[in-house]
Length: 256
Image 1 (cartoon, helix red, strand yellow):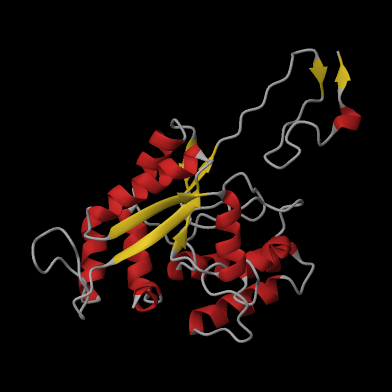
Image 2 (cartoon, rainbow, N blue to C red; image 1 turned 135 degrees about the vertical axis):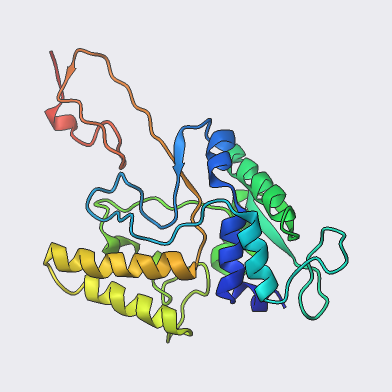
């Protein structure tokens, strides 16, 4: 039953529209971050593109998409039900030791309640999260994070982005892509990795991110700002958004 909802792109888009990312940045990151709608942030100067599908907070649009699926509050009690009369409810796990993610989960739960979706937030031990997501696959939804590979080339993230990948959370380790958009995503990512020409690679990758942001194998939410500091007597200090943030050029640092 839940699989029927989640595999409908209208449901995934409705959930994305129902989440107030701006409020999430304010309340969970102390206004020190940005909303995101794909895997990359503007910090990735080579691979980031702004030409993607975006989902500004719009609960009415979310309700319209759900209603188009046959999901709405039929009884007027604030709980949406599907065409079969099933209340639309699912579990959301995240690691209890991470206060930011727990707060994000609380906001997701509160946001989705406004469009009639019941989210059962379950903060659990990090080891349990990892076991469910990468082992038993026994979960409805999860709040986690990705860190860019070093260097931040898409080839290093294919295990996350490709339907055949182990870490492709939506439907992992597909021997053959199960939907047309996943086939297109796979083809574009493969084309991007088969040439050394950067312009050609960017073209295919940006097309792949357009598919990613429209069909939403995962719903990307927010990215934090990073803050680093050094005494003013350190020369050649060039902090990076990639690890190691301040010491990547340690052989070039010097005292003024």
